[in-house]
Image 1 (cartoon, rainbow over the protein chains, first blue to last red):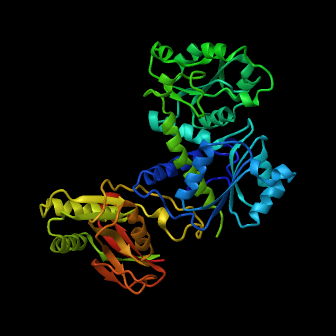
Image 2: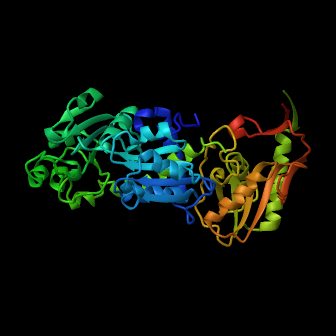
Length: 309
Length: 179
Protein backbone atom coordinates (compact mmCIF):
# COMPACT_ATOMS: atom_id res chain seq x y z
CA UNK A 1 0.00 0.00 0.00
CA UNK A 2 1.85 3.04 -1.16
CA UNK A 3 -0.85 5.10 -2.79
CA UNK A 4 -4.01 6.83 -1.60
CA UNK A 5 -7.26 5.23 -2.74
CA UNK A 6 -8.66 8.66 -3.67
CA UNK A 7 -7.69 11.47 -6.04
CA UNK A 8 -9.17 14.23 -3.87
CA UNK A 9 -9.40 14.73 -0.13
CA UNK A 10 -13.04 15.70 0.20
CA UNK A 11 -13.77 14.14 3.57
CA UNK A 12 -12.66 11.40 5.92
CA UNK A 13 -15.78 9.51 4.84
CA UNK A 14 -14.10 8.69 1.53
CA UNK A 15 -10.88 7.35 3.06
CA UNK A 16 -10.04 3.90 4.35
CA UNK A 17 -7.84 2.76 7.20
CA UNK A 18 -4.80 2.19 4.96
CA UNK A 19 -5.07 5.72 3.58
CA UNK A 20 -4.90 7.14 7.08
CA UNK A 21 -1.96 4.90 7.94
CA UNK A 22 -0.12 6.02 4.80
CA UNK A 23 -0.80 9.70 5.52
CA UNK A 24 0.52 9.29 9.08
CA UNK A 25 3.68 7.47 7.99
CA UNK A 26 4.36 10.12 5.35
CA UNK A 27 3.70 12.86 7.91
CA UNK A 28 6.32 11.29 10.21
CA UNK A 29 8.93 11.91 7.53
CA UNK A 30 7.75 15.47 6.91
CA UNK A 31 7.79 16.18 10.63
CA UNK A 32 11.49 15.31 10.57
CA UNK A 33 11.93 17.59 7.53
CA UNK A 34 10.30 20.62 9.19
CA UNK A 35 12.63 20.28 12.16
CA UNK A 36 15.76 20.52 9.98
CA UNK A 37 17.82 23.70 9.78
CA UNK A 38 16.52 24.06 6.18
CA UNK A 39 12.88 23.05 6.23
CA UNK A 40 12.20 22.72 2.56
CA UNK A 41 12.18 19.88 0.01
CA UNK A 42 11.91 20.28 -3.77
CA UNK A 43 9.36 17.52 -4.51
CA UNK A 44 6.53 19.73 -5.82
CA UNK A 45 8.53 22.33 -7.68
CA UNK A 46 6.47 21.79 -10.86
CA UNK A 47 3.07 21.89 -9.13
CA UNK A 48 0.89 24.98 -8.71
CA UNK A 49 -1.68 25.09 -5.92
CA UNK A 50 -4.53 27.56 -5.50
CA UNK A 51 -5.83 28.26 -2.00
CA UNK A 52 -9.43 29.35 -2.36
CA UNK A 53 -10.89 30.62 0.88
CA UNK A 54 -14.53 31.61 0.57
CA UNK A 55 -14.70 31.79 4.36
CA UNK A 56 -12.36 33.34 6.92
CA UNK A 57 -9.47 31.32 8.25
CA UNK A 58 -6.14 32.06 9.87
CA UNK A 59 -4.63 28.83 11.10
CA UNK A 60 -5.76 26.52 8.31
CA UNK A 61 -4.81 28.94 5.57
CA UNK A 62 -1.37 29.63 7.01
CA UNK A 63 -0.81 25.96 7.66
CA UNK A 64 -1.71 24.96 4.11
CA UNK A 65 0.37 27.75 2.64
CA UNK A 66 3.37 26.81 4.73
CA UNK A 67 2.97 23.14 3.83
CA UNK A 68 2.81 24.01 0.13
CA UNK A 69 5.85 26.25 0.32
CA UNK A 70 7.88 23.70 2.27
CA UNK A 71 7.20 21.28 -0.58
CA UNK A 72 8.36 23.94 -3.08
CA UNK A 73 4.99 24.24 -4.82
CA UNK A 74 3.94 27.53 -6.41
CA UNK A 75 1.10 29.04 -4.43
CA UNK A 76 -1.65 31.46 -5.33
CA UNK A 77 -4.07 32.76 -2.73
CA UNK A 78 -7.60 33.88 -3.15
CA UNK A 79 -10.10 35.12 -0.64
CA UNK A 80 -13.71 35.67 -1.54
CA UNK A 81 -13.95 39.10 0.06
CA UNK A 82 -11.60 40.61 -2.55
CA UNK A 83 -12.82 38.77 -5.64
CA UNK A 84 -15.30 38.63 -8.48
CA UNK A 85 -17.49 36.31 -6.42
CA UNK A 86 -18.92 39.53 -5.07
CA UNK A 87 -19.77 40.51 -8.66
CA UNK A 88 -21.92 37.43 -9.17
CA UNK A 89 -19.54 34.83 -10.61
CA UNK A 90 -20.43 31.17 -9.96
CA UNK A 91 -18.11 28.79 -8.11
CA UNK A 92 -17.37 26.66 -11.19
CA UNK A 93 -16.59 29.73 -13.29
CA UNK A 94 -14.31 31.15 -10.62
CA UNK A 95 -12.40 27.89 -10.28
CA UNK A 96 -12.23 27.18 -14.02
CA UNK A 97 -10.81 30.65 -14.59
CA UNK A 98 -8.14 29.95 -12.04
CA UNK A 99 -7.44 26.50 -13.48
CA UNK A 100 -6.99 27.90 -16.98
CA UNK A 101 -3.90 29.56 -15.55
CA UNK A 102 -2.52 25.99 -15.24
CA UNK A 103 -3.20 25.18 -11.62
CA UNK A 104 -2.86 21.52 -10.59
CA UNK A 105 -4.46 21.45 -7.18
CA UNK A 106 -7.12 23.41 -5.32
CA UNK A 107 -7.39 23.80 -1.56
CA UNK A 108 -10.84 25.14 -0.80
CA UNK A 109 -12.77 26.35 2.21
CA UNK A 110 -16.39 27.14 1.53
CA UNK A 111 -19.42 27.96 3.72
CA UNK A 112 -21.64 25.45 1.90
CA UNK A 113 -21.52 21.76 2.82
CA UNK A 114 -20.59 19.59 -0.18
CA UNK A 115 -18.87 22.39 -2.09
CA UNK A 116 -15.72 20.29 -2.46
CA UNK A 117 -17.59 17.24 -3.75
CA UNK A 118 -19.49 19.42 -6.22
CA UNK A 119 -16.29 21.01 -7.48
CA UNK A 120 -14.49 17.68 -7.87
CA UNK A 121 -17.24 16.55 -10.25
CA UNK A 122 -16.97 19.60 -12.46
CA UNK A 123 -13.35 20.66 -12.68
CA UNK A 124 -10.17 18.92 -13.66
CA UNK A 125 -7.90 19.35 -10.64
CA UNK A 126 -7.12 17.62 -7.39
CA UNK A 127 -9.33 19.10 -4.66
CA UNK A 128 -8.52 19.30 -0.94
CA UNK A 129 -11.39 20.26 1.31
CA UNK A 130 -10.21 22.74 3.94
CA UNK A 131 -13.65 22.89 5.54
CA UNK A 132 -17.08 22.95 3.91
CA UNK A 133 -19.71 24.55 6.12
CA UNK A 134 -20.71 22.32 9.03
CA UNK A 135 -19.84 19.19 7.04
CA UNK A 136 -16.21 18.05 7.08
CA UNK A 137 -12.72 19.34 7.81
CA UNK A 138 -10.61 16.31 6.97
CA UNK A 139 -7.09 17.66 7.51
CA UNK A 140 -8.07 18.86 11.00
CA UNK A 141 -9.35 15.40 11.92
CA UNK A 142 -6.18 13.81 10.53
CA UNK A 143 -3.93 16.08 12.54
CA UNK A 144 -6.05 15.51 15.66
CA UNK A 145 -5.69 11.73 15.35
CA UNK A 146 -2.01 12.13 14.51
CA UNK A 147 -1.52 14.19 17.68
CA UNK A 148 -3.31 11.54 19.76
CA UNK A 149 -1.11 8.87 18.19
CA UNK A 150 1.96 10.95 19.01
CA UNK A 151 0.93 11.56 22.63
CA UNK A 152 -0.62 8.20 23.53
CA UNK A 153 1.17 5.89 21.09
CA UNK A 154 -1.97 4.64 19.43
CA UNK A 155 -5.49 5.72 18.54
CA UNK A 156 -7.00 2.25 18.61
CA UNK A 157 -9.00 1.50 21.74
CA UNK A 158 -8.72 5.04 23.13
CA UNK A 159 -11.77 6.83 24.50
CA UNK A 160 -12.19 10.25 22.94
CA UNK A 161 -14.87 12.76 23.87
CA UNK A 162 -15.72 15.72 21.66
CA UNK A 163 -17.16 18.49 23.82
CA UNK A 164 -19.17 21.53 22.81
CA UNK A 165 -20.98 22.74 19.74
CA UNK A 166 -21.34 19.48 17.81
CA UNK A 167 -24.23 20.78 15.73
CA UNK A 168 -22.28 23.45 13.88
CA UNK A 169 -18.93 21.70 13.86
CA UNK A 170 -17.24 20.24 10.80
CA UNK A 171 -14.36 19.22 13.04
CA UNK A 172 -16.68 16.97 15.05
CA UNK A 173 -18.01 15.00 12.08
CA UNK A 174 -14.58 14.49 10.48
CA UNK A 175 -13.16 13.49 13.86
CA UNK A 176 -15.92 10.95 14.44
CA UNK A 177 -15.23 9.31 11.07
CA UNK A 178 -11.45 9.39 11.52
CA UNK A 179 -11.42 8.09 15.10
CA UNK A 180 -13.87 5.29 14.37
CA UNK A 181 -11.89 4.24 11.31
CA UNK A 182 -8.88 3.80 13.57
CA UNK A 183 -10.79 1.87 16.22
CA UNK A 184 -11.25 4.54 18.90
CA UNK A 185 -14.42 4.87 20.99
CA UNK A 186 -16.09 8.23 20.47
CA UNK A 187 -18.45 10.20 22.69
CA UNK A 188 -20.00 13.59 22.09
CA UNK A 189 -20.87 15.87 24.98
CA UNK A 190 -22.64 19.22 25.03
CA UNK A 191 -25.95 20.93 25.64
CA UNK A 192 -28.80 18.92 24.12
CA UNK A 193 -29.60 21.76 21.78
CA UNK A 194 -26.13 21.61 20.24
CA UNK A 195 -26.09 17.84 19.69
CA UNK A 196 -27.66 16.80 16.39
CA UNK A 197 -30.62 14.43 16.56
CA UNK A 198 -29.80 10.85 15.58
CA UNK A 199 -26.05 11.37 15.99
CA UNK A 200 -26.03 8.08 17.95
CA UNK A 201 -26.75 6.39 14.61
CA UNK A 202 -23.09 7.10 13.74
CA UNK A 203 -22.17 4.79 16.61
CA UNK A 204 -21.09 7.47 19.08
CA UNK A 205 -22.08 7.72 22.73
CA UNK A 206 -23.99 10.82 23.78
CA UNK A 207 -23.52 12.43 27.19
CA UNK A 208 -24.76 15.71 28.60
CA UNK A 209 -22.82 15.58 31.87
CA UNK A 210 -19.29 16.87 31.35
CA UNK A 211 -17.83 15.28 34.50
CA UNK A 212 -19.07 11.83 33.50
CA UNK A 213 -17.70 12.32 30.00
CA UNK A 214 -14.28 13.41 31.25
CA UNK A 215 -14.09 10.49 33.69
CA UNK A 216 -14.75 8.11 30.79
CA UNK A 217 -12.26 9.52 28.30
CA UNK A 218 -8.51 9.45 27.63
CA UNK A 219 -8.69 12.51 25.39
CA UNK A 220 -11.09 15.46 25.39
CA UNK A 221 -11.34 17.53 22.22
CA UNK A 222 -12.86 20.87 23.20
CA UNK A 223 -14.75 22.72 20.48
CA UNK A 224 -15.50 26.39 20.23
CA UNK A 225 -19.07 27.63 20.37
CA UNK A 226 -19.63 28.84 16.81
CA UNK A 227 -21.67 31.95 17.46
CA UNK A 228 -21.33 33.02 13.83
CA UNK A 229 -23.33 30.01 12.67
CA UNK A 230 -26.08 30.35 15.25
CA UNK A 231 -29.33 31.83 14.04
CA UNK A 232 -31.18 31.28 17.32
CA UNK A 233 -30.18 31.00 21.00
CA UNK A 234 -29.10 27.46 21.82
CA UNK A 235 -28.29 28.10 25.49
CA UNK A 236 -29.32 30.81 27.96
CA UNK A 237 -25.96 32.55 28.36
CA UNK A 238 -22.23 32.09 27.78
CA UNK A 239 -21.75 32.12 31.55
CA UNK A 240 -24.13 29.22 31.97
CA UNK A 241 -22.48 27.33 29.09
CA UNK A 242 -19.09 27.75 30.78
CA UNK A 243 -20.46 26.50 34.11
CA UNK A 244 -21.87 23.36 32.52
CA UNK A 245 -19.43 22.58 29.70
CA UNK A 246 -16.27 24.61 30.34
CA UNK A 247 -13.14 22.76 31.48
CA UNK A 248 -11.05 24.30 34.26
CA UNK A 249 -8.02 23.11 36.20
CA UNK A 250 -10.03 22.26 39.34
CA UNK A 251 -12.29 19.98 37.33
CA UNK A 252 -9.32 18.24 35.67
CA UNK A 253 -7.56 17.77 39.01
CA UNK A 254 -10.64 16.16 40.51
CA UNK A 255 -10.72 13.39 37.88
CA UNK A 256 -9.43 9.86 38.52
CA UNK A 257 -6.75 10.08 35.81
CA UNK A 258 -4.82 12.61 33.78
CA UNK A 259 -6.53 13.17 30.44
CA UNK A 260 -5.19 14.88 27.32
CA UNK A 261 -6.84 18.11 26.23
CA UNK A 262 -7.11 19.12 22.59
CA UNK A 263 -8.59 22.13 20.86
CA UNK A 264 -8.78 22.79 17.11
CA UNK A 265 -8.59 26.56 17.68
CA UNK A 266 -9.41 29.37 17.76
CA UNK A 267 -9.78 29.19 21.54
CA UNK A 268 -12.25 31.34 23.40
CA UNK A 269 -10.30 31.45 26.65
CA UNK A 270 -12.55 31.36 29.66
CA UNK A 271 -15.48 29.91 27.70
CA UNK A 272 -14.82 26.28 26.69
CA UNK A 273 -11.47 26.05 28.50
CA UNK A 274 -9.72 28.29 30.98
CA UNK A 275 -6.24 29.68 30.37
CA UNK A 276 -4.58 27.48 32.99
CA UNK A 277 -5.89 24.39 31.17
CA UNK A 278 -5.00 25.68 27.70
CA UNK A 279 -1.42 26.39 28.81
CA UNK A 280 -0.99 23.26 30.93
CA UNK A 281 1.10 20.18 30.13
CA UNK A 282 -2.07 18.19 29.59
CA UNK A 283 -3.00 20.34 26.59
CA UNK A 284 -1.45 19.47 23.21
CA UNK A 285 -2.99 22.41 21.38
CA UNK A 286 0.30 23.78 20.01
CA UNK A 287 1.47 20.27 19.06
CA UNK A 288 -1.70 20.02 17.00
CA UNK A 289 -0.75 23.18 15.14
CA UNK A 290 2.78 21.92 14.45
CA UNK A 291 1.48 18.53 13.32
CA UNK A 292 -0.99 20.34 11.06
CA UNK A 293 1.84 21.41 8.75
CA UNK A 294 3.31 17.89 8.57
CA UNK A 295 -0.11 16.30 7.93
CA UNK A 296 -0.95 18.81 5.21
CA UNK A 297 2.45 18.28 3.58
CA UNK A 298 1.74 14.53 3.57
CA UNK A 299 -1.74 14.93 2.08
CA UNK A 300 -0.54 17.33 -0.61
CA UNK A 301 2.49 15.15 -1.43
CA UNK A 302 0.42 11.97 -1.71
CA UNK A 303 -2.30 13.59 -3.84
CA UNK A 304 0.24 15.39 -6.05
CA UNK A 305 2.01 12.13 -6.76
CA UNK A 306 -1.21 10.94 -8.41
CA UNK A 307 -1.21 13.87 -10.85
CA UNK A 308 0.58 12.42 -13.85
CA UNK A 309 3.39 14.34 -15.43
CA UNK B 1 15.84 -15.11 -14.68
CA UNK B 2 19.38 -16.30 -14.03
CA UNK B 3 21.92 -15.04 -11.56
CA UNK B 4 25.63 -15.28 -11.06
CA UNK B 5 27.65 -14.67 -7.92
CA UNK B 6 29.83 -11.59 -8.18
CA UNK B 7 31.08 -11.62 -4.60
CA UNK B 8 30.70 -14.15 -1.80
CA UNK B 9 30.74 -13.46 1.94
CA UNK B 10 34.53 -13.81 2.21
CA UNK B 11 35.17 -11.46 -0.69
CA UNK B 12 32.67 -8.91 0.67
CA UNK B 13 34.49 -9.02 4.00
CA UNK B 14 37.91 -8.45 2.40
CA UNK B 15 36.56 -5.55 0.37
CA UNK B 16 34.92 -3.94 3.41
CA UNK B 17 38.22 -4.05 5.28
CA UNK B 18 40.06 -2.56 2.32
CA UNK B 19 37.48 0.25 2.06
CA UNK B 20 37.80 0.88 5.80
CA UNK B 21 41.59 1.15 5.45
CA UNK B 22 41.26 3.53 2.51
CA UNK B 23 38.95 5.71 4.59
CA UNK B 24 41.46 5.74 7.46
CA UNK B 25 44.23 6.70 5.03
CA UNK B 26 42.32 9.83 4.01
CA UNK B 27 40.44 10.69 7.19
CA UNK B 28 42.88 9.61 9.90
CA UNK B 29 40.97 9.87 13.19
CA UNK B 30 37.62 10.85 11.69
CA UNK B 31 37.47 13.93 13.93
CA UNK B 32 35.92 16.07 11.19
CA UNK B 33 34.43 13.29 9.13
CA UNK B 34 30.88 11.98 9.06
CA UNK B 35 29.63 8.84 7.35
CA UNK B 36 26.22 9.12 5.71
CA UNK B 37 24.43 6.01 4.45
CA UNK B 38 22.00 6.71 1.62
CA UNK B 39 18.58 5.21 2.38
CA UNK B 40 17.26 2.65 1.87
CA UNK B 41 20.14 0.30 1.01
CA UNK B 42 23.25 2.28 1.77
CA UNK B 43 22.31 2.11 5.44
CA UNK B 44 23.52 -1.49 5.81
CA UNK B 45 26.90 -0.79 4.23
CA UNK B 46 27.37 2.37 6.31
CA UNK B 47 26.52 0.56 9.55
CA UNK B 48 28.89 -2.28 8.68
CA UNK B 49 31.79 0.02 7.81
CA UNK B 50 31.30 2.02 11.01
CA UNK B 51 31.35 -1.22 12.99
CA UNK B 52 34.57 -2.39 11.33
CA UNK B 53 36.23 0.99 11.91
CA UNK B 54 35.25 0.93 15.58
CA UNK B 55 35.92 -2.71 16.41
CA UNK B 56 38.85 -3.67 14.20
CA UNK B 57 40.64 -0.35 13.84
CA UNK B 58 39.73 1.18 17.22
CA UNK B 59 38.45 4.46 15.88
CA UNK B 60 36.24 6.08 18.47
CA UNK B 61 33.17 8.31 18.18
CA UNK B 62 32.41 7.84 14.53
CA UNK B 63 29.59 10.11 13.45
CA UNK B 64 27.15 8.02 11.43
CA UNK B 65 23.90 9.16 9.86
CA UNK B 66 21.32 7.97 7.37
CA UNK B 67 19.92 10.24 4.70
CA UNK B 68 16.63 9.72 2.90
CA UNK B 69 16.53 11.29 -0.56
CA UNK B 70 12.90 10.56 -1.53
CA UNK B 71 11.71 14.18 -1.52
CA UNK B 72 14.76 15.26 -3.54
CA UNK B 73 14.46 12.71 -6.33
CA UNK B 74 13.97 13.92 -9.90
CA UNK B 75 11.41 11.26 -10.89
CA UNK B 76 8.49 12.41 -8.70
CA UNK B 77 5.20 11.86 -10.63
CA UNK B 78 7.11 10.20 -13.49
CA UNK B 79 6.66 6.59 -12.44
CA UNK B 80 3.60 4.50 -11.71
CA UNK B 81 4.02 4.40 -7.95
CA UNK B 82 4.11 7.02 -5.24
CA UNK B 83 7.67 7.38 -3.97
CA UNK B 84 7.78 6.07 -0.43
CA UNK B 85 10.04 7.77 2.04
CA UNK B 86 12.47 6.28 4.56
CA UNK B 87 13.79 7.67 7.79
CA UNK B 88 16.51 10.28 7.94
CA UNK B 89 18.68 10.13 11.05
CA UNK B 90 21.25 12.87 11.14
CA UNK B 91 21.64 14.10 14.68
CA UNK B 92 24.49 16.49 14.07
CA UNK B 93 25.25 19.50 11.89
CA UNK B 94 27.38 18.84 8.84
CA UNK B 95 28.68 22.43 8.67
CA UNK B 96 32.40 22.36 7.77
CA UNK B 97 32.57 18.57 8.02
CA UNK B 98 33.96 16.11 5.50
CA UNK B 99 31.14 13.87 4.41
CA UNK B 100 31.44 10.38 2.97
CA UNK B 101 28.27 9.26 1.21
CA UNK B 102 27.89 5.50 1.35
CA UNK B 103 25.69 3.50 -1.01
CA UNK B 104 25.71 -0.11 -2.16
CA UNK B 105 25.45 0.29 -5.94
CA UNK B 106 26.33 3.30 -8.09
CA UNK B 107 24.33 3.11 -11.31
CA UNK B 108 22.92 6.22 -13.05
CA UNK B 109 24.19 8.62 -10.39
CA UNK B 110 20.75 10.17 -9.91
CA UNK B 111 20.42 9.09 -6.27
CA UNK B 112 23.75 10.71 -5.50
CA UNK B 113 22.63 13.89 -7.27
CA UNK B 114 19.56 13.90 -5.01
CA UNK B 115 21.70 13.22 -1.95
CA UNK B 116 23.99 16.14 -2.80
CA UNK B 117 20.95 18.44 -2.73
CA UNK B 118 19.37 16.81 0.32
CA UNK B 119 22.45 17.11 2.51
CA UNK B 120 22.43 20.90 2.08
CA UNK B 121 19.42 21.01 4.43
CA UNK B 122 21.81 20.07 7.23
CA UNK B 123 24.45 22.73 6.61
CA UNK B 124 27.38 23.45 4.27
CA UNK B 125 29.89 20.65 4.36
CA UNK B 126 33.56 21.19 3.66
CA UNK B 127 33.73 18.40 1.11
CA UNK B 128 31.75 15.36 0.04
CA UNK B 129 33.17 12.03 -1.07
CA UNK B 130 31.42 8.94 -2.36
CA UNK B 131 31.99 5.33 -1.42
CA UNK B 132 30.17 2.50 -3.18
CA UNK B 133 30.51 -1.25 -2.91
CA UNK B 134 29.63 -1.82 -6.57
CA UNK B 135 30.33 0.64 -9.36
CA UNK B 136 28.40 -0.14 -12.54
CA UNK B 137 30.62 1.22 -15.26
CA UNK B 138 29.38 2.92 -18.45
CA UNK B 139 25.84 3.44 -17.12
CA UNK B 140 26.03 6.93 -15.67
CA UNK B 141 23.47 9.62 -16.61
CA UNK B 142 25.37 12.28 -14.70
CA UNK B 143 29.04 13.17 -14.25
CA UNK B 144 29.40 11.43 -10.87
CA UNK B 145 32.22 9.02 -9.93
CA UNK B 146 33.05 7.29 -6.64
CA UNK B 147 36.13 8.14 -4.58
CA UNK B 148 36.20 4.66 -3.08
CA UNK B 149 34.87 1.64 -4.90
CA UNK B 150 34.60 -1.99 -3.84
CA UNK B 151 34.33 -3.64 -7.23
CA UNK B 152 33.75 -2.34 -10.72
CA UNK B 153 31.13 -4.23 -12.72
CA UNK B 154 30.13 -4.14 -16.38
CA UNK B 155 26.42 -4.84 -16.44
CA UNK B 156 24.19 -4.38 -19.44
CA UNK B 157 20.80 -2.73 -19.17
CA UNK B 158 18.53 -5.69 -18.43
CA UNK B 159 20.92 -6.94 -15.78
CA UNK B 160 20.67 -5.77 -12.20
CA UNK B 161 23.11 -5.99 -9.32
CA UNK B 162 21.68 -7.34 -6.09
CA UNK B 163 23.51 -6.77 -2.83
CA UNK B 164 22.49 -8.91 0.15
CA UNK B 165 23.44 -8.24 3.74
CA UNK B 166 23.35 -10.59 6.70
CA UNK B 167 21.12 -8.03 8.45
CA UNK B 168 18.29 -8.18 5.91
CA UNK B 169 18.82 -11.21 3.64
CA UNK B 170 20.72 -13.60 5.90
CA UNK B 171 24.02 -13.59 3.96
CA UNK B 172 26.63 -11.22 2.63
CA UNK B 173 26.76 -11.58 -1.12
CA UNK B 174 26.48 -9.75 -4.42
CA UNK B 175 24.69 -11.22 -7.43
CA UNK B 176 24.42 -10.19 -11.06
CA UNK B 177 20.82 -10.94 -11.99
CA UNK B 178 19.75 -11.32 -15.63
CA UNK B 179 16.06 -10.42 -15.98
